Length: 83
Image 1 (cartoon, one colour):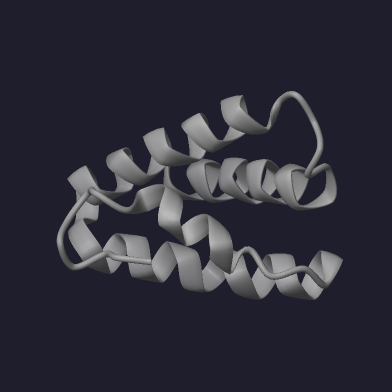
Image 2 (image 1 turned 180 degrees about the vertical axis):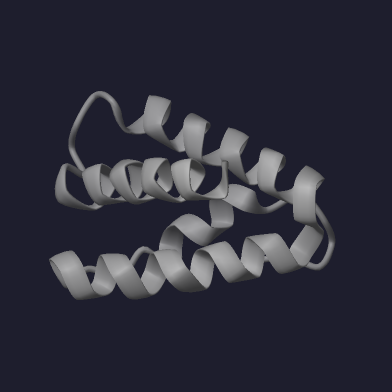
């Protein structure tokens, strides 16, 4: 399951970074937030941190854009995650 969520997040974030003016951005951000809730429910703050580390490295390497601003989409899940 983790692999599938990772790939979905890669696709969602890559789309958002490459198409910042798309009408689909809100929908993609909502799905990123939903996945964050699933990750947190399954593995807590460690799961969020581990997933984002992998996402950032892969996306930065593949398209040379930094997904760090999307970390804030997972704000509110826990007091420990504030970006």
